[in-house]
Image (cartoon, rainbow, N blue to C red; front, side, top):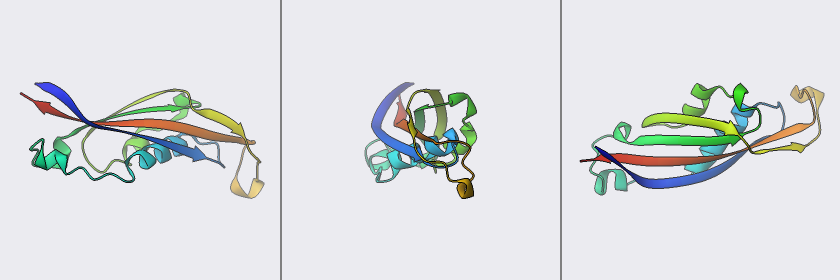
Length: 121
């Protein structure tokens, strides 16, 4: 079987308070898919169910080793999902607010690419 890409969507996510790379990564993936409709999955590719599509996610975020991957993938409602997390994104100095449980002044910014593929003969 040959895999063919149907779509690649990009997104950005920020965790302004809490310093959680998982939150920033999840928001980046959600941003990437927020305005998508994929009628081509049925009308062009001929899939009978959205879980037949292959969804590959790549996220660049500060502190990638702290990302809880299952939480990031849970943002995607369908598909055979995989996630690659790498070091990247940005750390920007914000303002720690004790009432928001900030540990420091860091704001974490993540970027994501979500690729939808199908398998063809």
